[in-house]
Amino acid sequence: MILSIETSCDETAVAILKDGVVLSSVIASQIKWHKRFGGVVPELASRMHAEKIHGIIQDSLNQASVSLDQLDSIAVTYGPGLEGALLVGIAAAKTLGMSLQKPVIPINHLHGHIYSAFIDAKTPLQFPCICLLVSGGHTMLVLLKDHFDFQLLGSTRDDACGEAFDKVARVMGLSYPGGPIIEKIALEGDASRYDFPRAMKHSPYEFSFSGLKTAVSQLCQSLGDDLEQEKPHVAASFQAAVSDTLVTKAIKACENFNVSQLLVCGGVMANRVLATSFHAQCDVKGISLSVPPLSYCTDNAAMIGMAAHHYLQRFEVPDSFYVTPQLSVESL
Ligand code: KG4
Ligand code: ZN
Image 1 (tube, protein in one colour):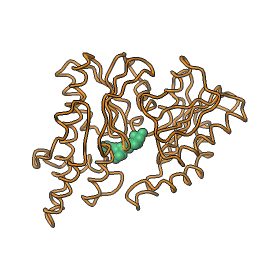
Image 2 (tube, helix red, strand yellow):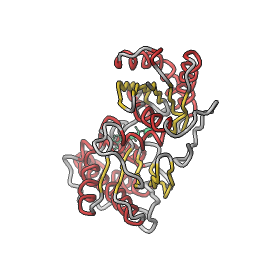
Image 3 (cartoon, helix red, strand yellow):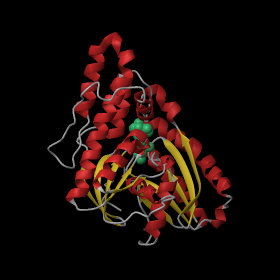
């Protein structure tokens, strides 16, 4: 039985897994506290984690009907993420580990997103495969050669994809986080109304979203009072530009590496329009697509527990580890 903790950004999350099955997954989102600042305030995030973590641990145990003495190990995100926020989760995990005399497994948050594909999976992920990880902090294409044997192919040169959704929402006068709001208002819009740039066409695995963000921002300024009625079309056209870029590059990577399976994960993949275009294009190309269940796309602790479940089958738990805010997907 694994208790896993995730506090890398603005979700305080704890989950319990038994033999790779999720018994409980509790998430306390801090969104309403950060909303008024238009983004995550790191100091506030750390304080909120410290306030919530004990209650969330208790809730996850209660929901799983599990007691502390039934736990075999504790898993915790140790990077990448906000240093102060990560430290709260690590301190809680190490305290639990020490008092229960159980090992504490350090988990890379990016591996958590990858292993979210194994939660409730009808068909298990086959290696090698290509992974597109798109979240608020990361946008990358990764070649998954085997369990925990990951090669970074390319990432974003500037904004992460989710960050672009959040910033575009802000220039359109929408709330935080922008992704779900843009998806919602885009439902009423015409995606072909505005032809936004698709950047980094010449580079197979690199991304850039700052030009797209600037193009949307300039359009919003030039629209003036007309922006209000154009918002659905701007949102739909922006979403189409993002979708085009992500789908094209991910499929190209599959073709270049001659793999027939694609995993798309991370908070941005909670976007169902995006998921639908991935499904459509993958069908055309004969690529098998894996998208984690919606509730495991955005940050959660079940994905950290799932990564830990697979970690334990392959590695010794280290005697000690430290918070690592800048951690590559290639690092264990
Ligand atoms: O994976 P995640 O929860 O946190 C990070 O590790 O960053 O991703 C959060 C990001 C935010 O930028 C949010 O706007 C974006 O995911 N997001 C979405 C949607 N839901 C969340 N982006 C587009 N469409 C959505 N439905
Ligand atoms: Zn994340």
